[in-house]
Image 1 (tube, one colour):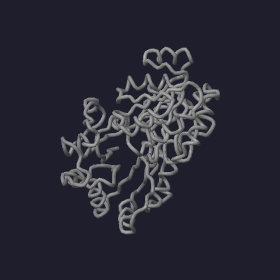
Image 2 (cartoon, rainbow, N blue to C red):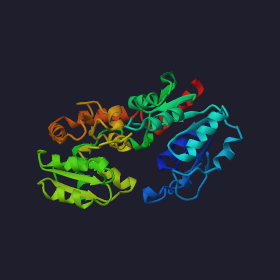
Image 3 (cartoon, rainbow, N blue to C red):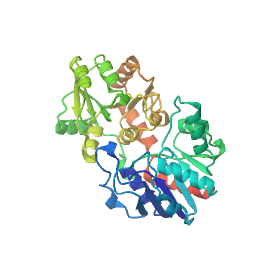
Image 4 (spheres, helix red, strand yellow):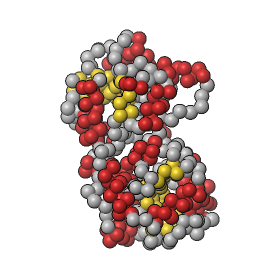
Length: 363
């Protein structure tokens, strides 16, 4: 089977997925560019790991979301693929690809990492419905994403679920870490508090760190909050200075460094105002770390079971955040950690590839 994926940039977890899928099909991936200016750095550290698929880069530079790269038609005109999958219809180049496929009546599939319906004018909504409708099948990671696709014209009978992830089997712990193992890691990381809350994400309004900081002063126990997200702005530092809870703002970490923080922590919190998925939720669960996040985090809605492996709270609700953090402090976290690992074992790169294969055969 010859398969073509059309996507934006070579994010490392995507390279891992395509390498796995490429073990079973003749796979070509057409990337719009090698990097993105809003990432600060180019996703080039994983390109040398490409081994099981053919990679085509329309541009060696950063992606231009609102510019059509006309070279894409060169590859679509060949009509040499059994399956074509488009992943980012909001980018102009892929938008043009969809229009071409529709006009030429070439069957294609659409894959999404998630989606949230927002307020917009009727003309924009109508155009998006035109773009989304008409695919032979849709690959969706969640119930909320299903509803998003349906809202924009997808046939509900053609929506198929796949486990979206950035994790391989080897990334998931076989068992929860015990207290002694966590203490050893905390000593290495210079963590001195009795209870450790971890957050991972950029210091931007959408991530909701201000909500966590406002709730922090009412969290019981001798607690430390560690947020790994680059450079914190003055607004976050001023909030942290006003509370008694110790708050530590950490620079971005490598994958291996970040793993130590996940393993050392007692609780993971992402008080996001909006995440169409949120791969950090997958990562936290892979280390057996109970999660608290909001009802605007799609990964949380899909992966978190209240009172089993974490809690879903209303967005912008600092009181609810404080209450569930205190609840986790006194709970049996070993049972919660075991549930985390049980759930996340279904969300591996290997399983993600196998589900795609089954769907290709079925549709």
